[in-house]
Length: 260
Ligand code: ADP
Image (tube, rainbow, N blue to C red; front, side, top):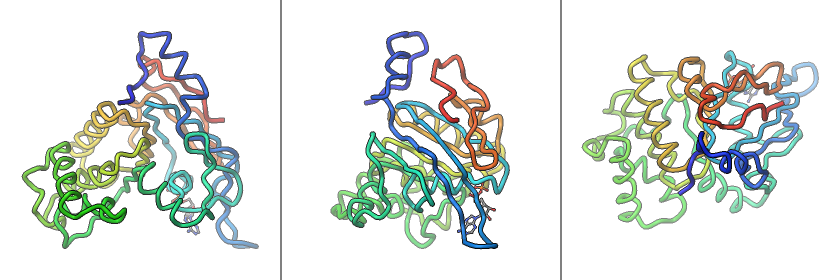
């Protein structure tokens, strides 16, 4: 299991700065929607280095381009120019579909603001879906899904239809679904944005725990500064460029200042 950086160990801090610990990078990402007079430049030169075990927040106003950036990192969309690297390999969104599907299904877990669950399917079936899509046996996939539902505290809701669950429960199911394939990176787009304060904290604490116990590298877009402050560092997104806003939990010893 990958451990998060240890605040007290200089050796770990050194290795965390080593390029071998880079999990995901974005270099000179540009995204322009549309063309001609109606074109909209959302990302102009976004650079990012995510190191193994980091939990990083992106805080920026609505419309700044957070979703666009996360979609590019997850290879759900193609940049106008620039490159995303995963484990030092460039991700080509025009690769053959199988290679790309493999990346999306195994390398990265994605969490949306709205859970995007299938309301008529049970919680367990929703969580099992990414495993079924990659061809796993149904019974086995359901078994793994149940384990993940237990991890997010919902073992007793496994056979309830997703549409019957509360907002906080639905987001927990979505977290289980994002992680069921065992990705190393979790990308979360305003994961608590639809929840009341109490549920937002509960969901964020769950994300923190899973981040730690599963050795994840997490990038979380949020409006919530109090939640962002619990991350290792905070990035802003201004005029299409990522900027370091602060090393939030600087006591963690996590590296900062990667974005430029
Ligand atoms: P955020 O997540 O920070 O709210 P988004 O990345 O969703 O920002 O959007 C950034 C800007 O890009 C917004 O002005 C939005 O309207 C625009 N935008 C997003 N997706 C598209 C699209 N597919 N086509 C055209 N414009 C888009």
